[in-house]
Length: 172
Image 1 (spheres, rainbow, N blue to C red):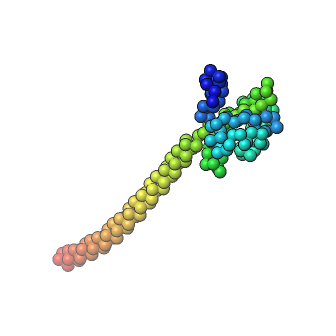
Image 2: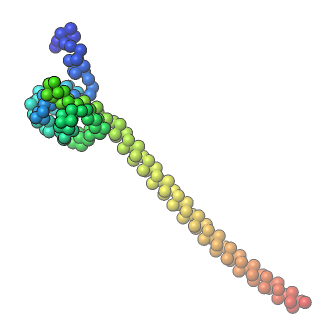
């Protein structure tokens, strides 16, 4: 291992950057990856150098686009389902070296948290709907019972009124 004085600051940043860094050439062959990339994609860095980028990456169309248009491409979310990983990508050409580089920020934790929140919201909404449905059933049952007792009371009161009317007409 080289001492700090023997390694440039850029080499140290490359080695210690927590983001996955990959550099590929115009023919979409991997030329360089940093240690974080190896950990993220569970690959041996030395073994994938020289391999087609598609052995690790799902798709290289954005790399081609960045090279052809000579512009930075930002991809807010790329899923690597086989690794249960989500990354944010910043892809940029390095024309002087005929290379394309990509910085990959692992956003898996944030995506899982968002999905968990959506699940919680969905479950809460279902529970609220269930409670409202149950309350509506109870209200309908109460209304039905009140309707029955009101009808029974009306019939009884009607009989009493008829009986009193008969008594009044017989007495009068």
